[in-house]
Length: 257
Image 1: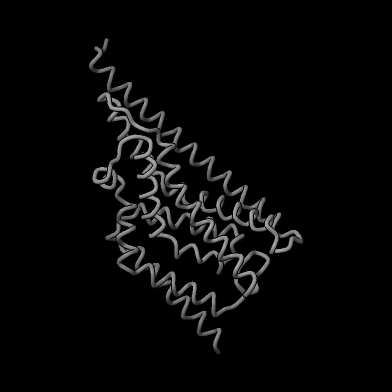
Image 2 (image 1 turned 180 degrees about the vertical axis):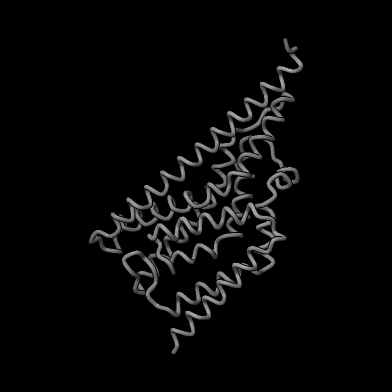
């Protein structure tokens, strides 16, 4: 028969595993729901609506917002789980802490702002550039420029600085922990800013492959998630950047032949 000193750590361990499972299931459901909303909204956008109507702009924003959350929430899982672990540790010592949902809301707020900017850019592109039915640019020169820009950014110091912050959530919280609900929200915002700095140029590739192309959406989302799990020293970002630069140069070369 085990004593209380042995049973308490076991209960804490089981509670932690249970909470981690809840977080992962919630992220999976949010991702699936986001993809479903993205595709359904995209279908509505393909109906004969006038691009100048407010309803069209709202639908376009919903599509970008649901797509960004579906793409970026899975890559935030390590930070959300780390936040949960730290709040449990504080709770065990009698300190109060905000739920992980508050931190996640701060993170989502950054991608909501990005979705607004992407919507405005999308509306502008539709007025000046022809897009395919899957919402990809038809110009090889612009497509090549998007690839080249993404590739060059992959190799910049800013990219690596932001990626390092995203890959080390424990260090991020240790150096910038804030108390209370507002503090949790602000930490979520801060982490979201680093994530945005890491990935924003890659999102431009959606206009190359197709904003409504599911393979590109999933492909970029998987790459972003893997990039945050693989150590910076492996130089995966630099290798990917080189491939994108070569690809972009080839596209540009074919455009001006």
